Image (cartoon, rainbow, N blue to C red; front, top):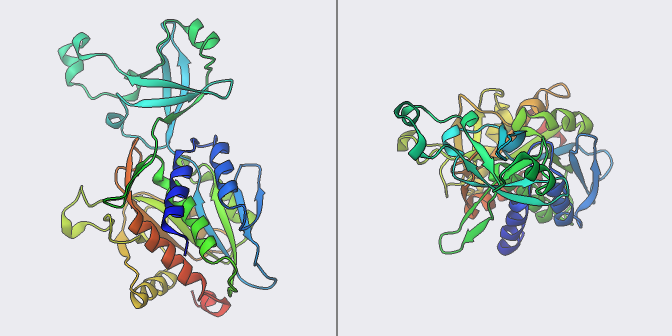
Length: 359
């Protein structure tokens, strides 16, 4: 098993990399570095990144270990004459979570410019404005400029510039917690790498490919391509899943911090293969690996396009709980990441062609 300090370092590096949907090059560079000893990397034209395990052998079933590389963020839409930047969301945001935060804007020189997400100060609001819900169209990005010309010529910011939450990941050793951005799904990316590292040098009954797919946050687009490129027989989807332990009654909570990864039976776009799901849950129980089960009415993961590809690829989702996903800051427990990796590692040492066919 990967050393805990190495796992934490890997998560922090991948979390801190900047990459909204479609602009994920920096994330891929970190993943390539983190996985350099594990096998052969390939890339497609949508910037999906594939890591084929060095120990793969001819004639074995192929298992796809998926996680997505993009994060939610924003994009510059227009530059006002007064130097304020209008923007659009990339991925799902609740408007009330956006204002009064710092962001990074990638300019034409490849440099990041700090900016504040600003709205009209309360001092200048009418009573009606104070009582009205604040939407994104009422917010701007302020880099401190006084004119459009200054933004374009001095800050070198243009239309369609990607905008990333300005957050640096940190680890609280006293409580075994990570606080940072993009845990959906950079924790998943780190989990794929850690799983492959844990199995490095071992003889397996299956072949492995790490699938670091792009553009999940805008409609699982990358995995629509990656799953066809790979042609796997089985899939494990790692995801950073929204934790519910602070927002629902205790009896309803199914994605709690420090209770292990969540395996969802259903969401808006996938009914998990019940035979594969039960096999994974039974194995976790047998080995004492803590897991949680969930029934979700909304949301979706890359499992959606994967399980509809190739005649129907059996797929499970191993989700690490993330408090406050799709905001600037997520909170996750390393304990849950370790349990997710342990479950995947144990599964991959047991799954063979006969078991996969039974699903």
